[in-house]
Image (cartoon, rainbow, N blue to C red; front, side):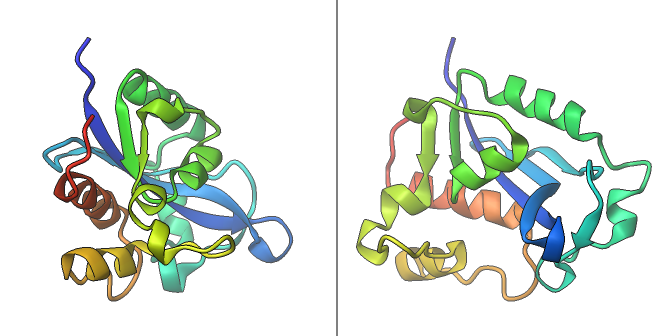
Length: 165
């Protein structure tokens, strides 16, 4: 089997007291050419206490519409899609965590971890917007988070810095 390269980005809302626990609200997967494989809102599995609308643009109607997918269906779809393939993203551990799935480290390409050792310290993660600007002189996301743009930006960094599959 030939390994494909997929980039992923998740947008989360808050659940629990103060909305501090992240729950998947929207997910995007793109292929190596940046073509959209999946872009969907996800129905909440718990009561949302903070939509984080200023950052995410997500409102209740996005998650409770008929077009929003069930979490179980998305979890299964993503796990099947990425199985045996290379997964690219920014802070992938967080995306995989909210999805409740694992992926082999050998097939994981987290651009934050791989590219930005010189920008990082033990308690700080550099944002994708900063990484894109610092390394590629490309402005990204001046407003709300856009998971499609995020997935493509991570893929762009991965390709531009010559990582091998």
